[in-house]
Length: 137
Image 1: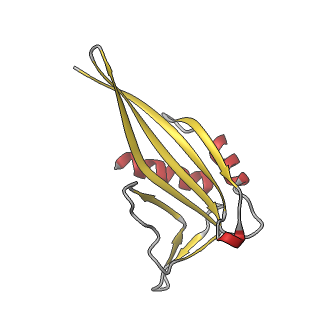
Image 2: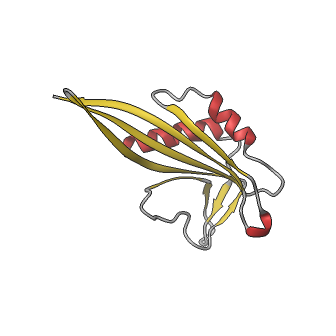
């Protein structure tokens, strides 16, 4: 989990001036950035108001590949960017994220998602990051 928290901190620093706000039902507010597992966990809780840019980082999936003396493991991280402000895109956030030094990560895919406000879909993007390491005897 420390990798997830480190990636969250890196993304937070890279996008701090662009991040929106989560406003919870009890009135507390926090920057709109979250790390969640990919097992159906829902965040933020129901009833939370989200404004501006929201960033959701999913914990990685693992894809090991056997080698002669161990394993090569690929961690695939997925970051979702959602812009809840009508008329704004995620382009500035993508530019900021891509110009930052993602030490140890390789950007493998970026998919932009156009907004459809009639359907409640904000402008967004999905960024996939890969991280490789070796495990051996």
